[in-house]
Image (cartoon, rainbow, N blue to C red; front, side):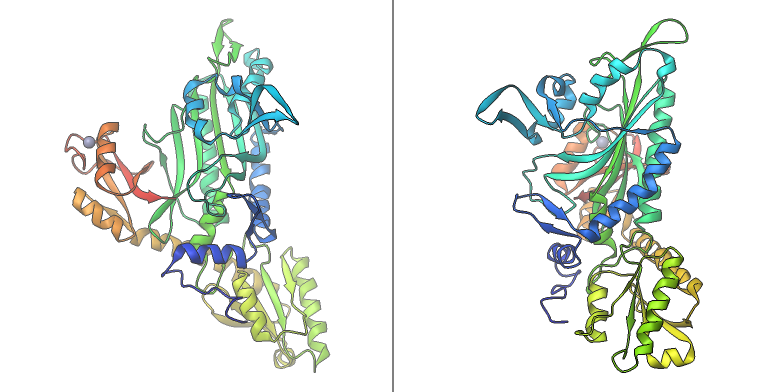
Length: 477
Ligand SMILES: [Zn+2]
């Protein structure tokens, strides 16, 4: 493979340029003619579909029903919950004209759907018998980013799903918020092999309009944190302005308690950043668009090799695996090895005349380069190798996270740790002014108060007063 086809920078030297090359060259996405937006190509879309195929049935089993709400949200609706509106104002894209005619009311292009959904909830919920109400939609949203955009990580339009629920009690809603974040942890760790910290956002950092925001945060190789998903306890912050009331078991009227939660194609960015290497993409096998590629060797001279390769493909596909057979004649095996490595296929299966004679195939793991030999029809060996790669990716990401997490007590130490591309766990008093003061002195900000964070080990790192909690502090995407 020629130089321009491969990745031309090292991940360690320029992660930003490396990331863009991997995304583009491994056909995850491409830039579109509209600035800040991308085309998600087949390798990216397949991962999003794998997430959806895993998560959608779990939601349905929980009683969540899929809907579709309009892309347009009237300004009056968006404004009804003031804090929520303020949180989104700078990023809202508006439709103001129809042809040459100005519209009577501006329409926002959906930045999120709380308001339009809750307008409907107020019609749909009458009694406690209508609860819990669980609505989800898979859709796109638009947020007109002014910061530098980056494929998947920050863009003006992205795909996501948004779940919205209404409950009789706060306790029930809180449980729902936790149910969703636990599933997001599983999606991140079990599918994408991206380990995360689960926790609560600080008061200043939570979703505008939420009582509690929970998030999963992953540590990237450059020491920046990436928020991989959020789940909010909205309390009655929306049910009051939107008048979502129900006649309770006590024959009295009550406002519902609500949650909302979502994950987006941003997750794909985290997967690329964490697992890709100097040769290109490395897909975790469970979401890999192609799980194994078969490369027949010397089949121009020994046609039987190709026959056996086709037989093997059918055998593996019969086991439900996603297999590609590269029988192109115009490229050498070496070229094909490089190309499929760049494309991130987790496992390569080599099949040559000598292997054939011995009734064997050669398995090469993308992540480690480890080679092994297996009996030709041993589909179990292929499955084991894929599972092994999945576990290895998660384990080495966990290792990285462990190495790059530091508990610090002093501001000077926090500064150093952040410069060393780590994230820190600090003690904090929980006051917003104090948070701002720390932000003025070091880079980054509070990420998440871990669920299993333990008790503070000393006074607040900023002001020395009694610490309320331990919180992760990092630069972020
Ligand atoms: Zn403090």
